[in-house]
Length: 157
Image (cartoon, rainbow, N blue to C red; front, side):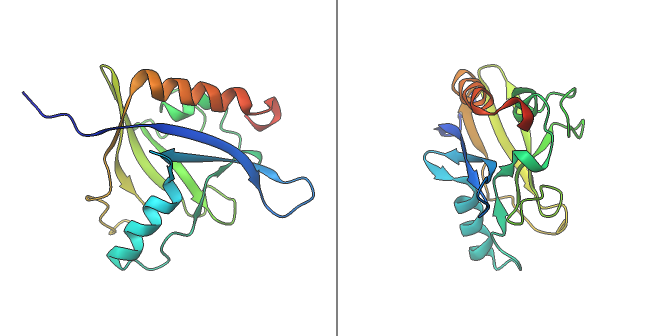
């Protein structure tokens, strides 16, 4: 019988992004209370990658992700879907997701959601094989996604 990977907790914080008087909104994933930016930055620094950790959460006001729950669960009908079950979990620290995204496969199997197969499309030779995978209980993941979607104004999704 296969051994289950450690089960993590996920949350998606919606927080202000930018220095404007009316800042944009950023969706920042956390794994076990550590931001994904912090996790991947540490990995990239340790691996000696160029341009390590130049990420931000997804700046929702800069890109129409459509149905945020569909996006976060990598449904094929979601806006910005690759059709391969891959989504950008992070965007560039400039606020543009397409500038410098951190992508991941989102696998939904039985009672679990797993992020794995991380990649940086502008550095395809980077090896993220030891980063993750991160596995969450499906009900907890979907609850976190619903909570984030409920906190996003209609104009951001």
